[in-house]
Each structure stands twice: as structure tokens, then as C-alpha cells.
Image (cartoon, rainbow, N blue to C red; front, side):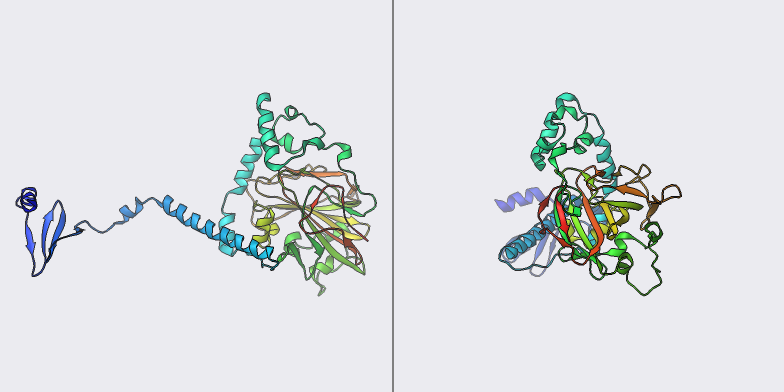
Length: 403
């Protein structure tokens, strides 16, 4: 019966025979017989895939599968590292290679940050403010009891909510210590600067000279050292004998108070603005990308305090392209175009103002649109000690260290 049905279906189609195998052309495909009857394999007479056929292939499933596999492998590695750390075994940081950094920097974070900034300026309807702000408060653990205005309907847009002021008694400034925390946040790292390298987190460093830029602003600070001397960049910053260079990194999370203040009594003589990338600066990325703070846009304020050189650097991040310094109306950050590796200098010292900008400890200095990072670099006597622990939470006004 099967043979009869095959004959009816095939009609007068040509049959090719061989010594051991016969084949029949059926519907554009060759049906093959072996010694034990017809085989199940069908061979097509279609041409091999051409360039046009390959172009019609959809890459999205392949990309999703590849990306999902990579993310899964990466998460497994992080889980393994956490287990080893839980057992008390020190795990070296997993540093990104140049390709990974280049791929990350190819993401248009500057454009996204400008779009986020415009979205923040959109005035919300009164009925929508409380639900939107309440969701943000719940997500990031914002303490609105410390805000000068607790009524959520008061904030017309997200920008006003992010820049909310605190009640005067919410952050008492420590008077007994010489340096205080300039902002609410988390201590990523602190200590002495050694061999012109600064640690952004434990085991991951960046170059002091790359971070601050060339030593051309010394005249604004009254430093008379000759750059041609065979001394390191670090030595050029230390102005007094017996002093050393110290650093402290404070990370501001999205739920933290977004303004920053003067950490001590000092005078600001110079500002250097580095346009750059806007990669995330959260602790996980800081452990992954070497010299992260040197890649990102930042504003370096340099000056002097009672013990010598002092600087505060506000580092931008994803959705934090806008860095505002209250006394500097000329500063413009996250511009649409910039030259790679460029920087802009501005001196606050002039013929009419030989002292620069004097700042008192705890005085309002500037603000971010969202969480970011503050880096302090300063000269102090060798007996200066930090009263901190890595990873601890700190609030503006609390002591960083003392002598």
C-alpha cells in the first residue's frame, strides 16, 4: 500500500539508482533508499547560505544568549569570591581589561545623564509628587525626617527633591577635630598616599598626577618648587618639612543627602575641570575598573589650609553629570562636546583678590544631582590619624581624623 501511495504521489518523477543506494527526487528533495529501505534523512538541493541570507539572520537572540551567559558566569565568580571572603580568605580584586573598559565607555552615559537632568526639571503635578517621591524614598531609604521641609508636595520636581536642605540641628559640625566629612556617604578608602598612587578601594589604585593633572597651578597656591627638580609629583605637593600626603574617599549613594560642605577651614585658590566619562562610581565598579576616578568627569578644587596643601575633588557619575560649586558661576559640566584628555583651569586669585575664596568648616560648598564621590587629598603632619573604618557609613559634620 505504501508503494502504491508513493507511486501516485511521485508520478513520472525521475529515479536515480546506484549500486547500493537508490534515490528519488520528491518535491525538490532527494529521498534515498539503502539496502534496508528508505532512509529518514533528506538532502536538499538548495544553495548554500548567501550573504543576503546571513544578513537576514536575527542577531538579537545570539546577543541575548551570549550576554546572559557572560552575566551568569560573572555573577558566579562574584558569588564564589563572597564565599571565600566569608571564610576569611582575602580575594584579589577582579580588574577589568582594556576591552571591557572601552565597551563600558562606549555606552552614551553623557547623553543619558543630560536627558536625566532635563527630566529632573520637569514640574510634576501636585497629585503625582507624593507617589513618585515615596517610591524613591522607599527604594533608597531616604530619611525625610531630617529634611528642612518634610512635605513632599513642596518639591515641584525631582531636582528640588534631590537638592533638599536639612534641618540645622540634623548635622552638628564637630569642632574638636580639624577635618570633618564633607558629605553623607560611605568611606571607600583612606590613608597615606604612597609612591604617587592613591587607592580608590583596597587593592585598586589610580595615579595621583593623572587625577590632579599637571602641576601648573602651583603659582595660585604660592608653591615655589621647581618642577625640573628630580622629585616626584607627590613631593611637589608637600610644602612643609615633616608632613605627609593623606587621602579619603567618600561615596554618596542615591539615597544620601546630595550637598557637600567644606571639610575644614581653608582657602580655595584654583579650580580644574576635567571633562570625561560618566561611569558609575558605586563600590562594585570602583573595585572593577582601575583608575575609575581618572576616567570620569571631575572638578578639582585646590588650595591651602593651616598645614599646607589641601584639595577637594567632586567626581561625576552616571546621571550625575551636573556638578555645581556655589561660589563658581562660570563652571559648566557635562558639555555635549569635549576633547579627550583636556581640562579647563580657573584661578580664584586675582589682583583684586589675593587670597582666593575663603571657606569655613561646614560651610555649603556644592551639590550633585544624584549620588557620586568626594575625594580629599591634603597635606598634614605625620602624626595625623584617621578615626575611620573602610566601608563605614558617615554623615556630614562627623570627624574624619585628628592629630
